[in-house]
Length: 87
Image (cartoon, rainbow, N blue to C red; front, side):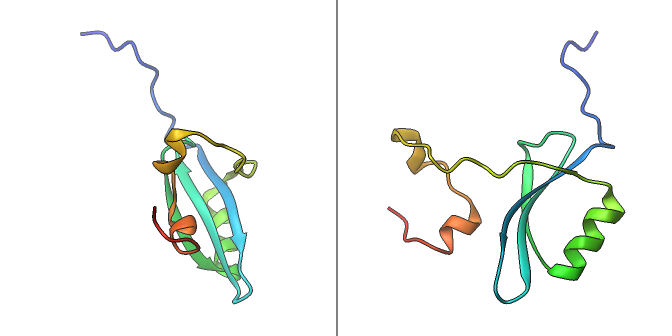
């Protein structure tokens, strides 16, 4: 059977910065192959810089938080969960 969907390039790695915290930690999203399928991570600032260098990441633009609508109740991340109460 011939595959019709494109292959995911596992050599491409992506980072989207969420926040540099006052306690020295960096919150960020890390993805391999597809920037929309990511893990939220938290590392000390120096470890974050090393992690990005070792993995040769592509830095992504910050997410636009201006979204509204009914689906917004279902779209949340760990960073938001630590800063607001659930609805």
